[in-house]
Length: 433
Ligand SMILES: [Zn+2]
Image (cartoon, rainbow, N blue to C red; front, side):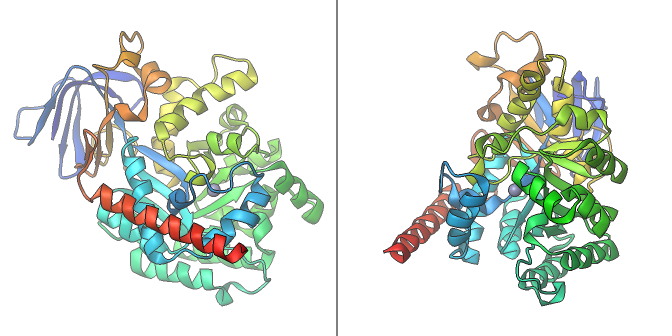
């Protein structure tokens, strides 16, 4: 595949104009003029911007089934009263259809990889396999009953996930370990999980200091912040993605920076659930890696990374009254390269020779909100909509083009997900009466 004479985001995250040539799923050339040769399909258009594919660093993809379910509640009540009873009634088939709809939504906003924490991981992996997208998949573990790791059903499923899916589909799927959060597990369990991940060289996905309540209750209960607690348990001795990091202290930031933990910033979810605003500019100054995530569709309520990048870009300027914060290049890097690094994918996340051809192509012409445009990258962050993504490519394969999903039947997926959501809602209504 050859992109000829297009705008693109260079490996330095500056705007460039020229050619991008792809062979065998890898970017072979990115520069002014690709060497002559048979590159296959040539896409030549002056009004296209080629970006590295977005990496959604924190998601619960099957939660498309709960979109709009239990609106208006704070996080703790929303989980206990609405989400958990709904999830108790989900089957693997429900999760498959919900995942496929979520993946479709992500592909349509330029996402080429995502990091997920949920149950029924085999069904999620099947949807990832079918769709052609990439994903780091983890089973979110809790241990409210105080049992050992080895006695946990969730840990059995984690081991199953590693055995069946780690490295599957040519490396598109990576299995990870997960602790849901500080407040849903006891210390021995967390220490055992940390040792399991370290021994396997696996990544870990956690929620960290999402709400003030969570952070302050941990301080009261343990005398440490959730970050200090996870540090003491050995969690940060592995590669870690920590979702939210809204209420972390300066000391926490030093730990996260020293350990190379990536904070997955989920601004829409934090705003919608009234959790607060993560101190992203301070994290960046402290040397903490920050990526972007949507969280689940039930707390967002979509999986639209173009929108997430827009909100992340303006939120911190407003809160800190400083228009120089979170420049567009920084935001685009958070939405791509930083997420890929958090996933342990060192050859992904930039338009760079030798990197995987994971690309999102933005259509700049024929759009009233994109013309005239004085600043192309500013347009990509501040003006563009997910609907402007014309093409999404992973490992050099076109997965989404001009509104069409090329690897699966979107109507079948939507039908399956709608039927599942309606059945569960009906069962819950029946249980209440
Ligand atoms: Zn989450």
